[in-house]
Image (cartoon, rainbow, N blue to C red; front, side, top):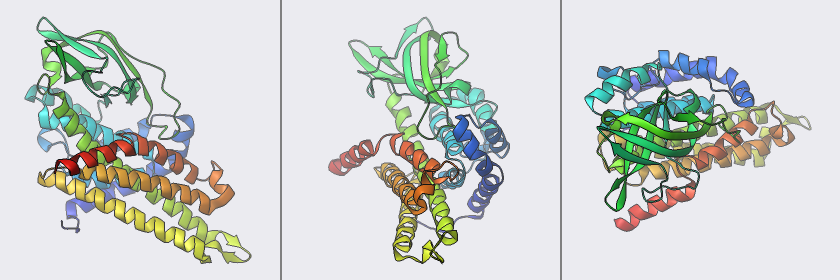
Length: 379
């Protein structure tokens, strides 16, 4: 792997860094406190093409690679993790499956609008009882005439209350067995409704709510991919989104490290900056090392996706290491700040809460370990 970024990748990263420092960082605290969807930030990012980074130019996107997308998410997350999560979801959980598996009709209908930010997408897979297989999934889709009828409910649907398109997974019957299928559902379809947004520990601006589908009628063209092969759609989405989640973790870790470093240099104890103490120096050195290690795994996974290699376990490895590093580093940042680290006027307590949620979403650390082990044992 070549670790030298291309001019195009650097330009994309620098553009994301500029808007992060100028617009996202100043608003992040208020967005967190108010649990408010960052509408203004998303609008500005859409104008820069950052909601369709890997969408081909023919469909209204930037046409950049996945490493470029990863760079953007890291920069955004270092300023506002909630905003970065929404950008990651739009690009990797919604647009990417349509790019790879959608029909020309579906691409024409959704991609230009999603890439331009005219429409926001959401991803509806999880259910209240944790079902992750077609046999256990309570959301069902049955054929009716030339279309489909969806019935069921989903949990933890990020941006669902503001989205216009939902990628919904449902069990479809085939004889006595059930298989998984994926559908592109306009959220204004009769029978679709969302609950009150959850009050979350972290990533609070990336508002999430339950989604209910009551006899939702869809045309046959709503089916994404092949009936009964929804796991292919799911794998495309998760491989990409776990790399995005890893980049998010790196960005959160970076923000916590920067806050701890700045504090350690400026905070005086007995006439000496606390950064002069070996204990603090060791903590900062460990933080920096963990960030670099997580970033390298994230870049490797993004590069693998770009060159078309077998993903194997590299996306799960990146997500596992980066999200756990973010939690450790933000916890250490709180420790460096001491009592001040527990106050909301300092950003590290927000980074700590964001990191803990990032460690859980897109599959908990133990889920990642199971996926990694299954690949190792298969090989």
